[in-house]
Length: 347
Image 1 (cartoon, one colour):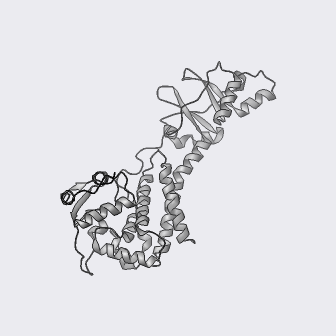
Image 2 (spheres, one colour):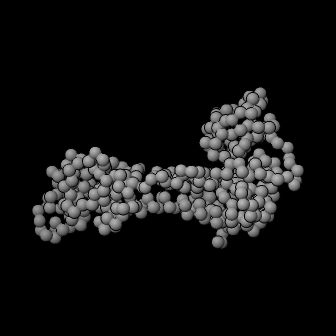
Image 3 (cartoon, helix red, strand yellow):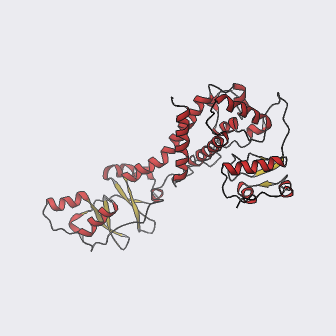
């Protein structure tokens, strides 16, 4: 249930460091949605306080420093600290993969290993293959002894050769096997040739199967967010580059102040448009930047909030986590891409 802390409680935050979750809890909130951003921001503003970096757009793991809201700087003041603050787009040391992608990584998120004992009936094998949509079904005794693999092609051969309809007659014995600690890319030629590999663990037990369709699916869920983030950046460059003044761009650039929108990071895009950031001069610039866009039908607070989420997603996928991006995050990207397509239709 939402609750507004008392004035003394809010004033007591001055000089403290607090995380986003703790600040939300103080206000009886669970999620940092648009209403939460407005409520917390207004309460702090009323107390003459602000957060550095901005509560509205910072990453969840970054501590917020509660400080007195600064007065408006002179018009010709040099803005450095706020432009440097919260610059999260450059990957930190260790963000890129520190070891090769393993075969076992491809089993993350998949269901359990389905196999048959060699004493099973062929009809049981074909029933399971139809039920689960399998193209291959391993036949394994006691989880460690491989007898072969049943495929739809091997089943057809039983009928073509008029052999007895037994599981043994339908087995393919030339089975590609890879250890779960093997380098994933080294087994791609075998998957290309056979359509699959069985994965064996360090204890000798078979753990699962990796198929060509698994690779296609994983590529889709892994690569699509990269392309969507790329399209978002491209459309932002297209629309902002024609209306935002070079001096406004320089104000949010951290190192090389080129004044070129093509040189901006996603974090800088947020600062270019964030009308609730703590630095007064950047905030005033952002007000003008937003007015120059002439997007009268777009809620700017929600837009900046969504853009900050895109930045966070971009930083997450750049870590190449074996776990696919959660569908809810992928959906956030799709919605934002569609919004930009509506306002920046032509590339």
